[in-house]
Length: 137
Image (cartoon, rainbow, N blue to C red):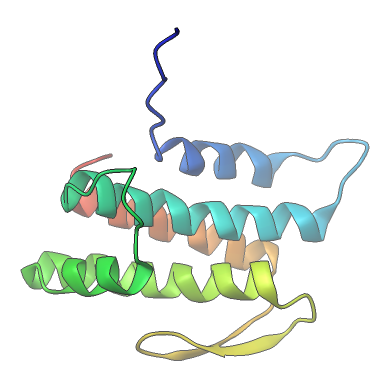
């Protein structure tokens, strides 16, 4: 039996960075942007859950609990939680609401999401800031 390969959730960031630049023959712009927004959230969420909090990937990872635990890790945790909240809003809008703009309530703020290329680039920057704060980048 072969060994399972351990996935590094930081690869979601690298994938998002490459995908946002892609302009191939089949340029599905809306799907591309929505995929970037969704993967950005998971780059931070999974790194927080697995690396910062030490949860096991076999556990059910409760998004709300991970958010609260990260937020309670002092000033650094609050900064990361703020980025995670924005990314969660982007992901929910991208994954569940096909009609945009859509106004959605996050854990701590309300935001209207357009699912635009500008928001996708903003999400990538939020991931970089969050992962730098927790020492992954």
